[in-house]
Length: 357
Image (tube, rainbow, N blue to C red; front, side, top):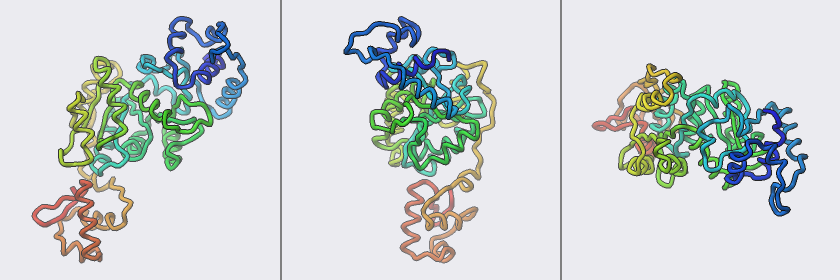
């Protein structure tokens, strides 16, 4: 990473709009060569002051943040092909993950229990095959990705010294301690502004060979990632788990499939595809983490009434009246909770008897 200060100078000058920068790099090769060029006074690159870049580099060294530049061998090749590839990536953690086969895994913030279970099943199985999941670190599906894998890449829309969303601070630290990697194109101190989130969502689809949508409702933010893949369908693919046409949790997912996304129903579907492109890196024979007890053991509900009902139904099939009696809930409380749990796909009603799916 020789002459890193010039790369940071270039990155700080151009920000996220790097299309012009890419043309210059293709012609001149390095940030230092661009720095030494003469630009008109109105051009942002006419300012040759390196103070801000040097301060940025000093802070990287202090906080053990690695700067991966566009010219570095470890810079992801798929990202290099993006329309606006980052000039630098600020990286903290296991940087070697950038050279492994990457798969962007995304989904809705408001997800069903089925979505959480599928996320854990797929991610745990895919990790066995040497695929590294990349997550946007939002709530719902993307948080489950981080909980399900030790070696995972988090792509932030803010400075690496910040956490977005802030409530995931402990999860971010867990990823770093378990051998994962946190990356961003944003400098220290930058907040997760709306245009930075949009830019990150495009780049997170660019950095991987493919994007995998676990579950997406209507107007899902994952549409940005899907569109990147569909626009580059000869080079990228978008995998999607289908869902019931009556479920609000799968409106986006089913729409993505209609637009050209590839329907998948098991992890091996994705592994087989990746084996073609990474034959020397993918472990094709793995154990599907489809544990029958996963639904019950992994259920995480915030509502205490819903938790009480799920605990009562664990390993049993119980009628409504008995369920009310065993839980000590009022009929109204039980009815509301049971209805929500059915909608979330956690329990099922068969002939008047309830059970955890």
